[in-house]
Amino acid sequence: MLSRALGRTPYYVVAGGLAVIFLFPLLWNTWASVGPQPGTAQESGYGLGNYRTLLDYDAGLWRYLLNSTFVSALTVALTLGVSLLGGYAFARFDFPGKNALFLLTLAILMVPYATLLIPLYVLLDRLHLQNSLIGLSLVLAMFQLPFATFMMRISFEAVPRELEESALVDGCGTAGALRRVLLPAVRPGLITVGLFAFLAAWNDFIAPLILISDSEKAPLPLAVATLRQQSMGAVDYGATEAGVVVLAVPCLLLFLLLQRHYIRGFMSGALKG
Amino acid sequence: MRVKVAESAPTAHRARPEHRGRPPRASAPRWRSRKVRGLAYAAPTAVFVTVFFLLPLLLVGQMSLSDWPLLAGDRGVNAPENYTDITDAPLFWPAVRFTLLYTGVVTVVLLGLALLLALLVQESRPGAGFFRTVYFLPSALGLASASLLFWGLYSPTTGPLSDLLEGLGLADDEVSFLGTPTAALMSTVFLIVWKFAGFYMLILLVGLQRIPHEVYEAARMDGASRAQIFRSITLPLLRPSLALTLLLCVTGSLLAFDQFFILTKGGPDNSTVTVVQLIYREAFQRLDLGTAAALSILVLAVLLLLNALQFRGLRRADES
Image (cartoon, rainbow over all chains, first blue to last red; front, side):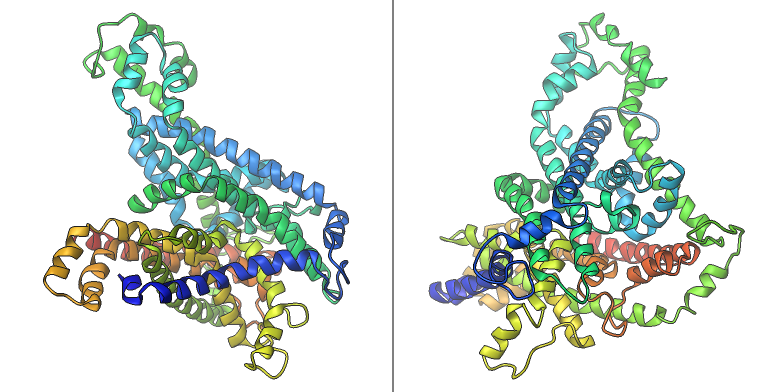
C-alpha cells in the first residue's frame, strides 16, 4: 500500500537506502577486523593480525570457542530432549497436573532473567554446579523450555492421530511410535527449536556473566567483552572486532541456511503466543 | 519408579489388536497406563521446571527477606529491611526514571520503524525478499555481539561515524557518541533499533499477511484513499500483532542490561544505569544478594502487573 503510493523508483531508493544502513555496521566491522587501524595488531595493510591477537588472548580463542560450542551443543541437546518428550506428553496424553505443568512452563517467560539468575547463582552452588559449563547449559535450557515445549506441542498436535494409532496397533509401544512414526513428522519443529536454542545459548551474555567466574570457562561473548574491559587504557578495538566476526559468522550462516524454518517456527510461535 | 512401570507395559497393546481408531477409554488398565506414560514423558519437563524455575523462585523470595551477603556470613531473617533499603540506594530513582525513559523512546522509535519496514516489504515485488533478509539479518546476531560491534563503530578514534559526520559537514569536531547522557541514550537506542527492527518487522509482516485481500478491494471499490485504508483497515486489523510487538518491546526494554553493560557501562556519570544493572551491582559489586533479591521481586511484580494489563488488551484486540 505504502509502496504503491511511493511508486517504483522511490520504493527502491527508500528500501535500498535502509538496506545500506542495515548492512553498513556488519560490513564495516568485517572490514575493520582485517583492515589497517592504529593501535591494533593490524597497523597497516590487510591481514589477520587482530585474529592472531584473539587467538592468544588469555585462555586462547580455541578454548573460548570450545566452551561456547560445548554450552551450545549441550543446551540444544537438553532442550530438544526435554521438549520432544514434553511436547509428546502434552499433545497426546492425559495425566493429572497436565495443564498446571504446561502453564508453569510457559510462566518461565513471565519472570525476568535477573530475578531468576540471582537465586540460580546460589542454587547451583549448592548443587556443585556453580562456575560449570554444565550448570550454565541447564539454566540456558530451562529458559528455552517455554518456546520449545509450546512449539513441540503444536508440532505433535499437527500430526494426525491415525498415524501413530496404526503404529500402536502394529505392535509398537508409545516409545516405538514416537521414534519410528512421530519423530520424522515433527522434524521441522525440532529444527526450529534447535536453531532457537543454539542462537540463544551461543549469544547469551548475562547468564555466563553471573554464573561463570573462571575466565578459563568463559564462553566467547563473555570473553570478548572482558577482553575489551581489561584492556582499558590501551583499548584494542581490532581484537574486539575480530571477536565480533567470530561470534557472528555461525549465527548468520545458520540463519541464512535455515531461514525458512526460522521464519515458519517463528510465525506459529508469534501468532499464538 | 514411574518410568519403569511405563516401560514394562507395551505388551498390553499387542494383546488388544481390536482397538482401532479412538483410544479405548473404557478399558481401565490401558487408560491408567496411558496416564502413567504421559507422566513419564512429562517427567523431564517437570524436573526442569521444579529445580530450575520453581525452586529458584521460592529461594529468591526467601533471600529477599534475609540478610544474604554474597560471601559467607549471617543469613538471618531481616524482613522487610531489604525492601525498605531499596529506595535508599542512591541510584534507585535515577535508574527507574532512566529505564522508563529508555523504554518509552525505544518503543516509539522501534515499533514505528518496524511498521514502516513491514509495509515496505509486504508486497512481493522484485527484491522484496532480499530486503526482508537484509533488514532481518542483524536479528540473528546476539545482543552482546551487536553491542560490541557498535562500541567499535561509535569509537571517536577508530570508528567511522565520527569521520563520516565531519566529512558531511554535520560536525566540526570529533563526535562523542557515548560521552554525554543524551548522546549515550540515543546511541544505544540506535543500536537497539538496528538489532531488533527486522525481528518486529517479521511479526508485523505475519499480521499484515493475515488481513484478507477482499477487505482492501472492497474499501478501494468504495473509493477510500490510501490514508483512509491504512487508518481504518490496516491499523485496526493489525492490532493483535501490534499489541504483541508492544508487549515484547516494553518487557524487553524494561529488562535492558547487555547493551548498557557493554556500550556505556552505565556512564557517563551513572546516567544510563538501568534497573537490571542496579540488581547486578547490588549483588556482585556491593555483594548484597538480599537487596538484589528484593529488587528482583519488585521488578517481577511490576512486570506481572504490566503483562496482565497488556494481555487483557491483547485479548480485547483479538476479539475485535
